[in-house]
Length: 461
Image (tube, rainbow, N blue to C red; front, side, top):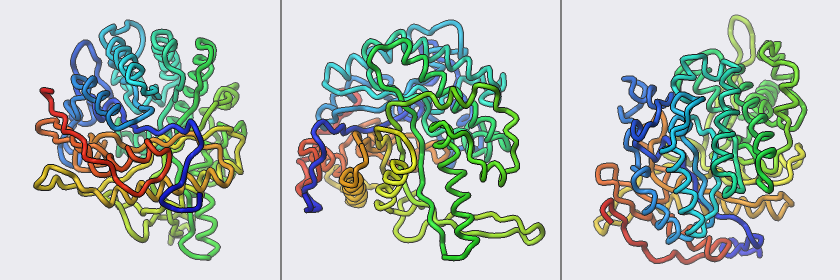
């Protein structure tokens, strides 16, 4: 259909919402769970913008049954979540914490009973702190530990889970965690080596999942940003090409069996001494789907060092912005989907995160009329539909996020959810955007009329 308000998606299209363990679970030190790098990082004064931690977050560890009921009420057909590695293996390897595995086993069973397909991610940045102290993602031993952890989870849950993502956003985990020091573990200057080990962990985990399951699908999740030059200057064009190489091709190319892009290696001056024989073959293990997290477009402004003349760049976000300061650009989603499908051999794409933070307010009637988020999602759902019309084999759309949650370095100060969470009472309220999304799911496409408000869910229900 050509009507913007009534675009139907292919039969069987998956509509879901996404979360991650540290951002919603809480219970950070209960029932035998070990410490993660985010537990340590958030407890370090000055690391988190508002001084909060994920110790409680949304309290999902105690409220998962109510949360599944809310998902079912909203009509979700799938739920993307992550396992907290030290909840399952407190020391990163070795002895299994049965209570932790039981929590996720019960969660999976509850989702399936509610008719909601589980889409778990093995690693959404919850590295056991003990492994970080042994070198973290700068050590190849962490790759071996991740393979062991994958085996533990797959052996216990592989009979019920059909869709597995290995690593979430290796660029963020490596660059912000080991390059810029803005995420846990807060290190600087070692992002390339950390990123390589994350990718190697993905490849080995993908192989293991295939070996130990029969009909499971396995993939990886990348955050991809279309790159656009700020002007038609030659420097802006070159910086945009390099920016794309650093942000996108550095991870897409090795997944496709092409190794790391030579132009970026030359620019960064790396000889890839951390790459061992066989690594690139492992990383290029075929995947069944590529998960894409999309939030905005990068507009590249080139700059040259006055002393050396070396080319560099900054990123700008012109036009309307979210509360994160990111440009609102639905066309960028269509663009990145079409570009990746044209340039790479992947056969199935899933939008594993797409959403926006806005400054939500609970009004006098107890509702959250987040029209800006509804408009954001409507624009991006339409953009996803345009990509399908252009021939992109897109099969899923997951909103980020199901709940307002602990937004990493921003703490509890930024709200992405289609469900509002009162962080004092842990009361859930489905926002107007959540009701709108329920209608999209029901119609398998864009609709014009919002659904009726959902009930509130409180901790003692």
